[in-house]
Structure formats: structure tokens, C-alpha cells
Image (tube, rainbow, N blue to C red):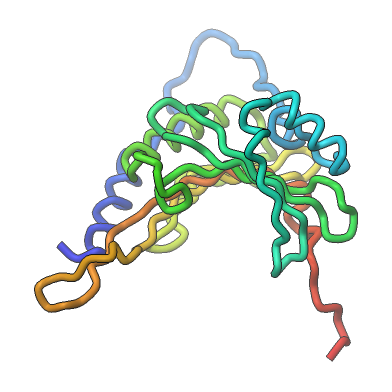
Length: 224
């Protein structure tokens, strides 16, 4: 089976088994779901300075903090901090949590939590494992209240990407959960001498302070 066909089988299978909203009527009254606040990830809150963020990460993840990585995002011109966390979700393997500081504000504006062997080479989690994690996270977030007109659940973005969940809070901050697969050369060749391409997957959970106007470098209107 070709890599493209493999992707399609995986993705169609994922769509068929995605969790559906409960249609049954519950005769007992339910409390209104709590509004989810997309204000950052764990103790790292949007608007934190670099100093405050690093102090929080050191306190919250003392072991992982020892291997904290700092880079400059060349395209967006943002300072980025990353650390690796183990066993956030059972079976999903390690995750890399990435914190983006705003280009202008120099404050925390975006956090990604990413699992999968495309991003973490030594991860043993494959597509099916990440699909289970995506289901669990989707069920979790569906237990909270988001702006109704912002909700998206189980949308095929492309042949390689499924948007499992998207929602915005009352301040228009966005949470996104996307499962993706890409073809990567394995380093081996087939009988015809062509590179063997294998599917690699990643699951990304994003917390975004301002999805409409991200604090990144842009060429200003009229500059050219």
C-alpha cells in the first residue's frame, strides 16, 4: 500500500471513530458547563514576562527545566522556550511544550504542546496512540463551555490534517487540537532504488492569546 493510501486509511478510520456529541436527553437537570479560560498552559499564563515565565517553569517542572532549550524563531522573530515532559497522557509518549514570547510585547502569547515521532524522534507513540490521546483531549474539552460560534469538532483540514477540536473563550483566545501525518524518508530504498517514505505523526495542542492578530514580525503595509 502506498504512503498516500496509508494516510487516507488512517485518517478515514480516525474520522469514523471520533467521539460524537451525546444526543440522548438526560431527564435530570445539568449544571451549566464551566467556561474554559484559554489563558496559557498550567502555571504559564499569557502576559508573563520572560523572567516570570522562567521562574514558573523552574518551579513547576524542575527536572525538565534543567534541559530547557531557548531559540529564536527566525520567521516570526520571537524568542521561544521549549522543554520535554514525560507521560502527560498515558500511551502518547513524551511531549515537547513550547512557549512563544511576543515579537513586540516580549510577553508570553502562545503555547504548543506536541506529541509524536515526527517531532520527537525517540517517541514510540504512533498514529493510533495519538488518535486515542486526541479523543481523550476532545472529550475533556467538550466538558467545558466555549463560544458556540467558535466550536469546531472533527474537521478534515486536508488529506494530512484533522482538526479534532477548536474553541475560543469569552476573550476570543483560542484553543486548537490538531492531528497530522507527514511522509518522511526512512533512509532505506525500495527494490527500484527509490527512497522509502514512512508516515510520521504528531498531535499538537495550541493555546493562542490573539489568533486574529498574533504578536509576530510582519512587513508593514506600504513598505514596498
